[in-house]
Structure formats: structure tokens, C-alpha cells
Length: 141
Image 1: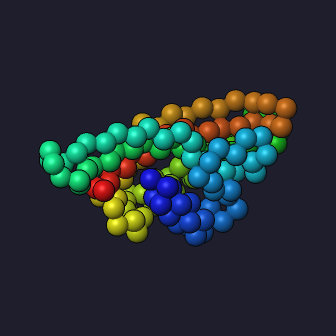
Image 2: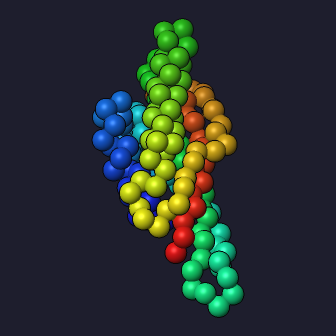
């Protein structure tokens, strides 16, 4: 699980459209940059392949969020800018996972982004938008 997360952070950091985005395998809290991609909780499930064998399949779901905040108001375009940037980040993550589902980790069989949720709002720093989604990963140990 950790190897996949680390590989995905590295791969996202190399994507040109994300060069100014903070990418982390952990929640960043209030000190994050204006644009960030963060991993959160992981839900893990395991199944043994056959009774008596040591091989098992592991399925886990990584919670992720693409966060963008832009100073300003709806009237000056900050809300649109935050929305558009969050969606660009989400699309970059989805493309990376779809085109390289194993992320170079031998034990990973497949991965895919699932169940995205779009939220937006305002705070004292401006207009924000986040796309919260899950990445489902299957591995054989």
C-alpha cells in the first residue's frame, strides 16, 4: 500500500500540468499551498487465495482530494478559477492512474479512480473547490 502511494506521489509530481501543485501521501492541514493533491484514509480488505497457501489478495481504497483556493469572489472569477483548477488536477490524477494503473509496483494488479464528489464554497481566503474521490487498488501478496 505505501509503495503504491509513494509511487503515485512521485508520478504526479512529474506531470507538467501539476508542476506548481503540492502532492502528498498525507493530509496537509491548513498549511497547504493554494493547489494541492492529498491522500487521506485507507480502507483495507484481504482475501486468501486458497486455504493453506500463503498468497493473498489485498484490496484497498485510498481517499484522495484535489484542493484549490483562489483569492476573490464569485464576481471576479475566483470561484470559476478554483473549480477549473480542481478539475484539471482531478483529471491529471485520473489519467495517471488509468494509463499506469500499477505505478511500477510489482504487487499491484490494477487501480482505478472511483466515486468522485465535487464541493465548493468560500472562506476568509477566497473561493475554494475540492474534488474528493477514491482510488481502488488491488494487489497480490
